[in-house]
Image 1 (cartoon, one colour):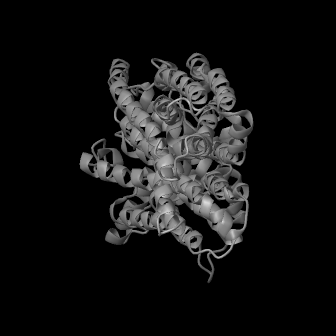
Image 2: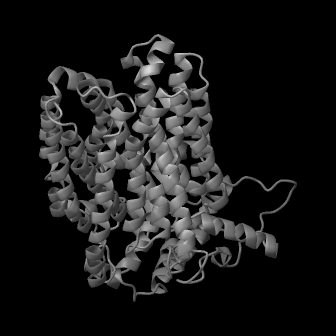
Length: 580
């Protein structure tokens, strides 16, 4: 028999109480098979049947989450129980253990994150978007320091650029810890520990005396900086509804992609000044410490099961009734179970969920191009056009402008999405998110061809390849935003794990691109390197069309994705399912 889920975050938190009662009774004493079936039949007979498909699927989603988090178990036979000690008999079984489980009161319970004030949600969103920006900003600002790091530590530029690669590899490694932790203990502390750890290790980079320390601190800075990258989308899924979540994810995507393009010219001018390359790291760690303070002051816990744990703790203190508990407190922190169930979940989702794998593969290529451009732009603007380190990085502003245009486009498209949602009884269909990404893929492809064939010779004005960045940036932003939303809508409660899986493969690919990008553009020539990348991007344009066609089928077969659809759960309305 498996434990049931934490309460769902809406007015139907208490609907699963019948099934949960079965779990509580079964874990309190040894039950035989016939008793088990009798209790199950009684439980189902008392369960409401007037639920719509969204409510039923939400219940199933939270049950699935609880099974994957807590694991499954069977009652231990009485003869195997540990003794109470000191000759004490076993205490009597609680008359009705379900009465001691805390729940949200109703749909309007102010404890639930989706019922918080808009002001509070905006404050949390701004703080977390800033934390995400800091993580991504620090990934690329180092690239501007390579010209000084190489001679100072007597290493080649190829070795020096490993500082970018190792940081992004930290991005790939960190989510294996941060995402499962956020689904066990809540979102707040993993984010705070992550941004603080990033700041500490960045101080180490700024003060390092040898190249070994430089590389190690860059890796661990990236490992801790991965915390907001992996968890923030899950926080937005916690606090925003289907109608407004897209706007919040737009903020997150902007923070992720403006950072790497804003840091090269910032770092370039700092490195050229009397401050030197170390101040590119000092500024990053100052931003990290500020992020830590802001999170401590303004970031509240948003994970519904963890909020109920806090409620249970307060109630125990207020009532002195130590039987009061939350479902999440039933989680048994067994290291073997943590590794096999929790920490392995991002990898299992990556390699067993086709949606996660293929969407992440497309996003990985686009993400890798971001770090390839960090090498390509200096080849064109500093090498061919003779600009200095600071001025030669200003063309990255074209990419930032394109991303802001992409943000404006997606906000306008949000109105169309809201109409579809309202017409479908507020039931989200994840594939509705994908059509704009087709336009994004086309623009991304055009931008790469444009850059390659206008940036290869000095005879073409530098404004031409700079302008290509507007189209490229637009495509990058629209692709990523729609894919982010598609993954969240598809996996809901497991948003942290699915984003961990996405970040792992995306960052692994992104880490590899700086190692060969400069050589590729120098050896093939800007025009042919741009053509090669443009052709690869063109091949990937139809990917959204594939998922629009087969996405619903894949989600129905998924172990992690609830299958929302216009009337997909009609049978479930008549025969409510129970995970027992």
